[in-house]
Image (cartoon, rainbow, N blue to C red; front, top):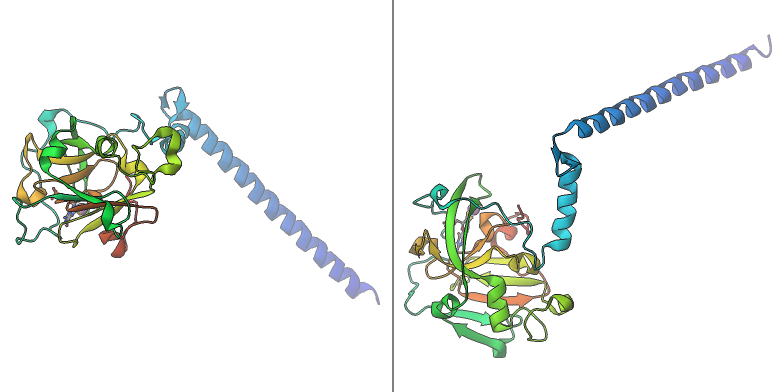
Length: 269
Ligand SMILES: Nc1nc2c(c(=O)[nH]1)N[C@H]1C(S)=C(S)[C@@H](COP(=O)(O)O)O[C@H]1N2
Ligand SMILES: [Mo]
């Protein structure tokens, strides 16, 4: 009689423990079932290069991180010329004001940071055209949701860096064995500095990153950046700055127009 309330307490506790144990086991088994199901599902995925698709895509991400630099891999998909649109859409006119005189245009390049004025020099389109010409036909994607296959011609940014010994602290041409010598970012601005992008060096050295002077094998139309624009296939369109006026290099992320509006800095695809 005296002990009864205590026994009841004990029983209550035991019951609670039993209930909790059942719940725990149920959760545990549900977890096993889910994991097993997921494993089976991955296994049943269409095989791609001997690896299940899901695992393969994870490997691709890792490789992308490791091999982008000086690599011919991980190119954006290219298309036949016949698939390129005849008239490319025009989008974005920040920094494309009418006061601009293309006849007086020169590209101002600073070997180092923008404030190091003694290391700046100027180039003409002729200088860019003197570099090996490359073409790329790829699906250009805008962050607003549209995309189109477009055909561009110009010089690789990496060839430009090589030729003018750019993007290094030492002022030597970029060297794969001295990656620590490379600046971490390149900055590109319109001549009026109204539109500007910052891009990591690996992406700038990607083989499909071009300083473009042609669209559909014709000189760039004015509203698409004549005389020189960037085309960077591995980023959203926001990074493909039209009408390049200035280029400089930096170890800190240069200001970026759309990043300031709240978009992702990398805008990587
Ligand atoms: N100078 C400048 N470059 C720019 C923009 C801009 O507003 N000004 N817009 C960007 C965006 S959002 C896109 S999608 C592409 C569009 O390039 P297009 O006009 O050749 O289609 O240019 C990019 N480069
Ligand atoms: Mo865009």
